[in-house]
Length: 131
Image (cartoon, rainbow, N blue to C red; front, top):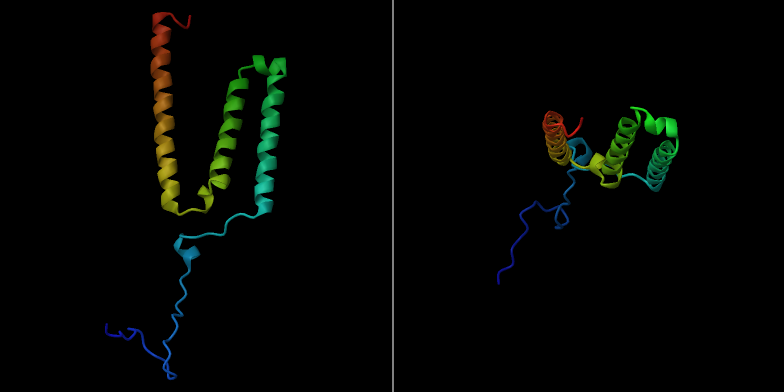
């Protein structure tokens, strides 16, 4: 087999010149610094506090009987969901395309569920199932 010479220019000593071009991946949105152990610890404490509040709310009879109980639990659950997705699934540190794909699909799914709730809620009310 024939020996092939490198296609890059050689230095005066005859060695191949090193590739010195620096690509800033952070500026391109490709790579970001990932969280440290301290960040994970803070996120875990935050999620624990929300869970404690959710459980505590269940044991307060006046709160359970109020109209704010279910929306409050749903909001806290949504906050926990987005926190886990952003930090533990590293979505916050991924390329924008991945975030767009995830949030776009999630938005379509949530809107579909809301539409179905309204649709079947009206059907159930008309048939007398909710009266």
